[in-house]
Image (cartoon, rainbow, N blue to C red):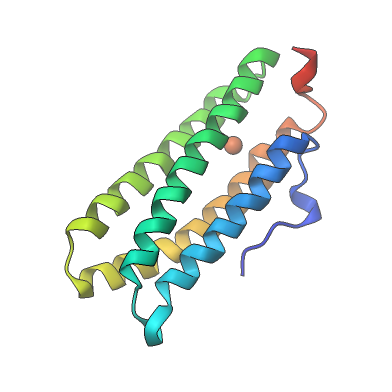
Amino acid sequence: MATWHQAMKVGIEVVDEDHRQLFALIQEFNAAADSHGGEVDRPKMTDVLARLQSYVTEHFEREETAQLEAGYDGYEENKRQHDELTHTLAVFTEKFHSGGPGEIKADTAKLRTFLGVWLSQHILKTDVKMRGRILPWAG
Ligand SMILES: [Fe+2]
């Protein structure tokens, strides 16, 4: 199960706290995906998705702003990955609101695995490169 751990520490408190919150939201996503004996709980998922999307948007903005202010050279790669996840979440949300139960169950199962892997890998391979490079209050 994907959770935040020490190796993911970027050293910017607001970013690390965001990452912990994102894992907590993914746990909520997993819970909504699994309610009622393995069926997706639609109202719960609608709520989690809205909160996940808005937190992801806020978090990406915080990271990107800190990187731009610091003139960080990893900005482009980081932004590209952020845009991909934003797109994936938007496509899923669209399918979730328009699809039938079978389709929703299959898509949710795929996104569930994807989200945990994406966040872990993005933090471990991309975000940790900020460690020691950006001090938000120094910009
Ligand atoms: Fe990032």
